[in-house]
Length: 127
Image (tube, rainbow, N blue to C red):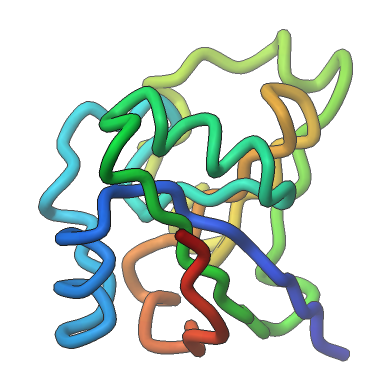
């Protein structure tokens, strides 16, 4: 059984062009609150809001589709979220268990783990 996600990544136009040419790289963002990976929103407006915080004039959102085995999706929600601290998301056992960390609090953030990045298919660019 597989899980599919339509996800939105807020960035700048120049970064969006680079991502479309070379793909996502989690190594470029090192202040990662929920561990290694690339961060997405499930909501286009939230991703656009984030990209506008980076640069109002240069805001851009990439829309992607991500599909992975259901058992590799780790959902964190409600009370569970309060039992974790950000450094625990870098725990190697968590990385082995999940390709995607689906956080339903914090505006429904999804973190795609590094090994899952090749599974991302670009859909659209929203400017």
